[in-house]
Amino acid sequence: MPFGFHKKEKESDTFDFTPVQRPQPPPLATDAAAHAPASPDVHAAPEFRMIRSTTTTQEEIFPPTSDSHQPHADRGSDHSGGSSSIGSSKLTKKEKAKRISLFRRSSGNPSSNVSSEHLPANLVSPTEDSKDQEDKWEWRASQLGLGGGVTSPVTRERSRTPTANDQGTDKNIQEAIRLHESGDLENSTKLFKQLADPAGANNPLSQVLYGLALRHGWGCEPDSTAAISYLQAAAANSASIEQEALRAGMKKGGAAKGELVLAIFELGNCFRYGWGTEKDPVAAFNYYLTAANLGDTDAMNETAWCYLNGYGLKKKDKYLSAKYYRLAEEKGNKTVGNSWIYKDKYVNPPK
Image (cartoon, rainbow, N blue to C red; front, side, top):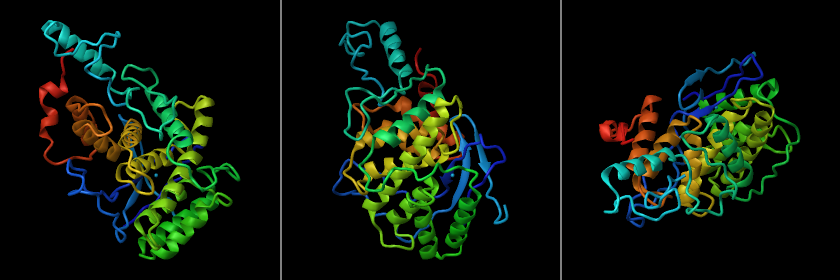
């Protein structure tokens, strides 16, 4: 199954390397003992393609040849500082509807009452009415990449600044991809390891793919601890590049945006299922939410699932769950049996 990446003509273009068939563990259930997540599939190697996307646009980027990827605010609290319940008999029907609408408008803002040691204390929390939404969500992703997650034994110092137009690295990644496609997972993973080396090419995409290889045992012994180290290194590496781009005024971010979003999503999986670290529902939700708002459709579905089940949140929220499921479906990532998300009360909640 092919996976690859593409180098655009302009240096300002950004990349999103998105697995087409990411291994999906079984959904968590209320009975954790009976439904504990299975270990990652050590045989299945996913197909990859590159997508540049936001929550409103999506564009597939084709690979080159060898010649030339908050929880919402508590509905039981008044934003003005009061503590009246939304369902309080002291509120009129109109007041209740108005208050519900107020809470929903702040839907993108993680609650300060739900915290995790794996999240930066000053994490940016964009709201739906924030200006420059994409910039703020990308800055949030870079904060997670640089200041959240786990302590990685993989050094985060860049021996040189990796660029999307590094032709030598591009050619080597394409060769690793070719080996993967042909079934030579061992040599493919060895090459990704070489390209991921912080003392060598220090390539963020290769760090993500090598981390996934370590997690799932593609051509190597599975090692979830080393896997999360490389995923965190990829997040930190690409986050540094993206922060520099944002500071320079690049509204859509820089050359490592795709790698950053992919690394953030995969770290969310680590925190959800306890791969290489302890389980942390709050961290998992926040990582998913961030990647979802930067266009990752798998993250949109996971964010929707979190809202639906109250995973990593203080309360469930079917309105926001429906919103993110609809976003994922608009991008072609449909979940079977979700017709309820198009009911009027979820599409057009009270204003």
